[in-house]
Every structure is written in C-alpha cells, then in structure tokens.
Length: 224
Figure (spheres, rainbow, N blue to C red):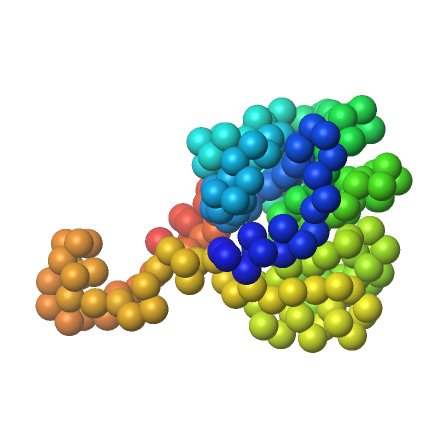
C-alpha cells in the first residue's frame, strides 16, 4: 500500500478544503479503497473523503452519498433495476465536483461510471487518480483512449498493465496487488486446515463466485 500512498502524495496539490472524492462502486473496490484511505490518513490525517463506498470505506471515515450496494451491478436486468440510484449517484458527485472543487478524484475500477465522472473532473481542473485499472486489455480496449484523455495517473496492480498503458501514452505506476499486504507470502497449510476444521491431507477446492450480490446468487448454486 505504500506505493499507492507515495503516488497519492505526488498526484495531489491540496486546495483549501483538503477534500478528496473517492468512488468504489463494488465490494472489491470498497475493500481496497478502505485500505488506501487508511494509509493516506496516516500521512494526511486532516484530509476529508466523500463519495461512493460500502461499510469498509464508511468505517475508514469516508462520507458516502450512496452505498456501493446500490451501484454494483451484473447483467442488463440489474442495471435497469438500479438505474435510478446510479443516475442519482452520478449527478450527486457531479455537483460535488462542480461546487466543492475537491483536490483529487480517486476512482477504483467500475469503469462505465468512473470514466464519465472523470470527464467531469477534467472539465473543472480536478486531478484524476485511477486506482486499480479496468480490464481494458481484456475487452473493449478502445476505452484506453478515454483513460488517456481523462485520467492524470493510472495506478495498476498487475505488472503487465504498466507496459500496456505506457504504450498507449498513459502516465502509469505499478504498485503490486493490495492483497499481498493482507495475505502472507508463505501460508502454513496445517494452520489453515485447523482453522477451517479440516482434517487429513485431502485436496481443498475453493469456490469463488465473485464479490457482487448478483454474482453470488447467480453463480454459487451452479458451482455447488
């Protein structure tokens, strides 16, 4: 996480209000964003945060105008069901950018929403830091042109992403995956089995349906 904090220090020139807008529209972004906010607060305790997030970002002291459970979507039907809340969230943040002029906009994944918001930030001269790249290298790579035009700094967590963005003319830094700060590099399998109540040496199968509510509802039954 220290890499992300160092880039934060390099990316922001604080205005009088010392306000940062952060947008984490999904559960995974809530987790990684909360760790980033905690680390930033260690070097800049007087910074205020407002935006979209879940319980972890709220616990870290972020004032959320919309909870991320109202913005996380999978599939067209869920998009339609939450469209009203997503639109209200967008216009709420757009108003904050225009009226409060924060010192920085931090975006975490969630590209369809975030790239639109980044355009509004650029319009008002607000620097944009994108933490955890959308997977433009995997699908719809044309979005990288929007990123180059709207994002001041991309902070990626996968090593190959750095070369991809550099080739596209995007200012980019690689900081490593944030889970490496939370999970030890070497795991004691005996302790893990004991903690999970598992005996013997039979194989362990992990079932990982995703972090979004709709993903879990749709995928977990089939996996089980």
